Image (cartoon, rainbow, N blue to C red; front, side, top):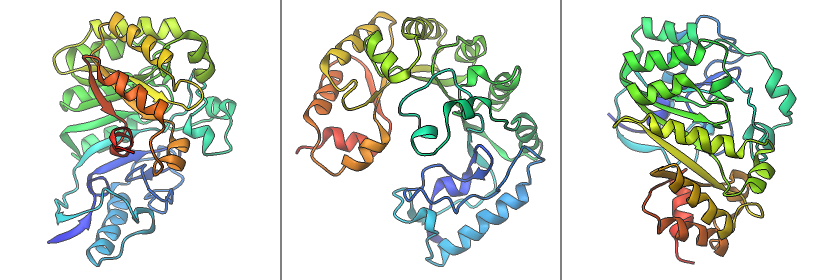
Length: 320
């Protein structure tokens, strides 16, 4: 039957810091949609997860939109596949990271400190993924996103297992990294699998990079990006991200130097984003001229340009 629902609710699973949820993009920031609370890596109870999911499906079929899903643009009315297979897994349980970005959502939207995030205990994802694999829950060609903390700093063997699982299932990998620590495992999967490695640099000069990232690793990140690009196969890509932060890098000097570095490492793909909190406050206003000028400048380059979201794309291309 036709009903209003969302692909994420039906077929995505997010392993967060201490919970399991169907998505991490609630427009209301209301996470009543947490399906398993106080999760610490114990044997993954898929029935508990599916029972909660089915409660939501029943509500949606009755026209009752869950609080965490209200006003979400991803809700669509159509006939849905209600099967149990998971076709997108987001791994974001770890928080340790050698970067200290001023826009990090774990700090800007909570009272956690960087020291807390870098020393907190969390669970090992390997037994959880093994259980899902053994129960035939992971769809072939599933998209696996490695997003939590800095994956090159995971305990020994954990990242390697995730990448191996993705290879044997022919999954599409999306890896988010700060690029400070070069990972041979990531280089190998860029050679052998289907992998999209995304590294956020956000600056064209060393001074601005250090203001935003609050670490001294500007040259190292560009060097590592160049090495990753040398390992690409036809099914993999490296994307360098530029998050526009008003009053930091929203000027053409940064954009020009950023593109010079992009050309130097022979990168073909960039992604444009805008700092989340600023964007949420300003997205319905006329587009800032300096932000628009950065987009217009990037657009002239012979590059594949993507956007962090459709909302950001619309903000950048709209006519004031």
